Image: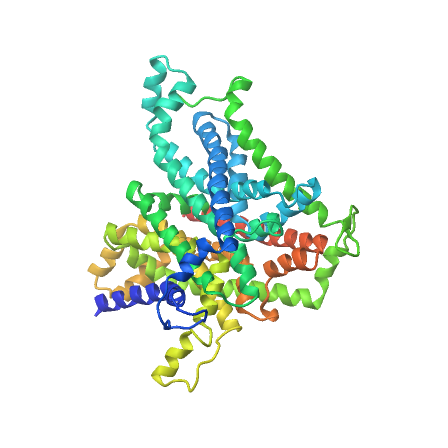
Amino acid sequence: MTQWLKRFYFLLIGLFLSLPLIVVAGVSVNAKQILAFPPQGFSLSWYGEIFANPEWRSALIASVVLATTSAALAVLIALPLSWFLWRRIAPWANIFQVLGIAPFTLPPVITALGLLTFWATTGFYGQPWTAVIGHAIFFVTLPLVTLSLGFSAIDRSFVEAAATMGANDRTIFRTVVLPLILPYLVSGYAFAFVLSLNEYIVAYMTVGFTLETLPIKIFNALRYGYTPTMASVTILFVFTAAVIFSLVAKFGDLPKLLGAMASDDS
Amino acid sequence: MKREPPQSVADYGPLFFPAGMLLIFFVVPFGTMIAVSFFQRQEGGFYTPAFVFSNYERFLSAFFGGVLGFSLMLAVTVAICCVVLALPFTYLLSRLSRRLQVIWLVGLLSVLSLSEVIIGFAWSTLLSRTAGLSNLLVKIGLLDQPIALFPSFGAVLTGMVYQALPYTILVLYPAIVRLDPTLMEAARTLGSSPMRAFFNVLVPALRNTIMATLIMVFIFALGSYLLPQILGRPQHWTLSVLITDQAIYQSNMPFAAAMAVFLVLVTLGLVALTLLIGRKGEKA
């Protein structure tokens, strides 16, 4: 009886979370340009459209370039900071950890508006690179949290042994620390990458009028009605996220990563 | 190597780049936004430096009071729905085998990372007249003809619960995983039914976690900026939607900034409350 009830509850939540995506997946294979479910006919042409239609293709390229570079910048900010916090006793420096987590904790519209006023005041409003910096700051939390977890897992005696043998900070970092935290670095990058790919408001408020990323493109298209390409892009996004998180789970310890993330947040 | 305080300027080296980036691109923009909130708006969308409170005075209108009240009410409802759904789910999840847990976590993360644009589009499809749930209800015979289930308050609420549920589960997950399993075993051995053990042992043991999670989900829901716009009518717009609307479409940056500052204050107050609850929890 209770076993049955448990299964039912899992099914219910699973259905709630997947139902919109199932319908969108169905809609995305309609043969004609109609919004119908169950699909009428079967065609994968709307997936081809993402790459064939110049507008969707340039949005796809913009999104991928933005996600790749901003996630890299987020890691470049997070890595030296978490290394410093682990290596040195400097309690006041924790303020930068808080500053790194703040943009992610506050409602996103605040970070977006702050950046909008900032770029408008400095005269760089609309430049594509401003979105890269915006996303890097917005998502720096993710590598910051995974990396602090990675550093806390390092056995300090390894580092001490290296120091005793005469290695300096730079050598220690390259030969001992970096290999140990690499999995955390990669998962931090992966989290920032996927979220940047999906991010709308910060991108919209910084470069919305000069550059279309995929979420901006979907939203703009949504205001003029429905095109099936939105559905195929949605499924492409879900699929990408699922693949990337599966890889993180395969090569890392997902329960441990998430256990730490939430406890750092709260 | 022991942790030691930095001795020379060179020891601070690693801090320069991250600190500079965060100060220039987060603290300064934040300050700019606060400054703009006191600026004077000019006709045509520009604004000039000034120190006026007129942007804040607009808060005192009945319209703004209505939006604020609705935003808070909506966020509270979303937070309660999410925690009620997520609590038993997360508990059951933590009892699954590790392999199954990882599969669920991957799925939850994938939904959590979805853009609000995509969530809004997916739900508007699911609730639409031509492709939506109502077709299913027609087939069962509950409805005569398919209808559109949005825009409506129910659609906004459902969309926002959908968005916040994976977040809620992932916030509860670490606390529930770390919970001492013997607690529930003891309750069961003493003859309590699973339901009773859940409500009389698990829920009280997690009281502080539940309170903190409610506040975190509340803040998360306050941040939702598109779903009320896509799935609701103008009367369902929240503070976040209004800020975006004022900044982009009405070109009234000073007013948008003033509302954003207000939203920050509400959020910070709640974060402080969460920390306070957390501290109490540690003592207990």
